[in-house]
Image: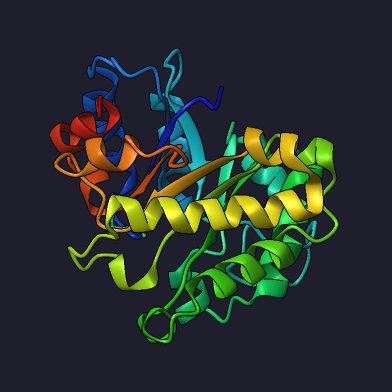
Length: 249
Ligand code: 13P
């Protein structure tokens, strides 16, 4: 059984003080679905988040991690610091990082390996652009992204890893993949993982959907056989909406 995961990617929103306030609201939410709930604030808000989350079941995630242990990488953040703050998960290869900050499949792989080595659990993002969708090559794109991201990952490490399928055209646009399309693409990703790691490992791997997922559409998306959770942007910034996603059932 794959435990559902609902993760909030707060992107570049919420100052440390706002982070604390939102977490206090989230802690008051009754979790009736039993999903694992994760929040991923900005790097600079992680300390405030870790403090506010003490004693809570809600897990802490970061939005990026560098692939070097330390050194001359101005503006980056290393895995050891995230671990020290109590971060458990880290989003890697989000399409906004790929689009605006030169992230490639190869750097996604490097970051993934470093995160795992440091004991962080990667949430690796894959997803096709609108042009790629229109060309009918969605599955080829996401499967290649997945396989490159997982190069050198061991079967044991895979147990700590989560994949998020986020169609780029659905992010922040209000457009969502239909539940059936999301499920089919996620099944293709699972198939790609099976080719490398075998059926059992692929069946145990959690694969989330992301892209305009909210309290209104979460139920139908989560009802699909292979959709194991959500990576939520906009709707994770408002406690009542995020509560609706957490309680998708
Ligand atoms: P939205 O939910 O705002 O579309 O963002 C999705 C996303 O990018 C989560 O990582």
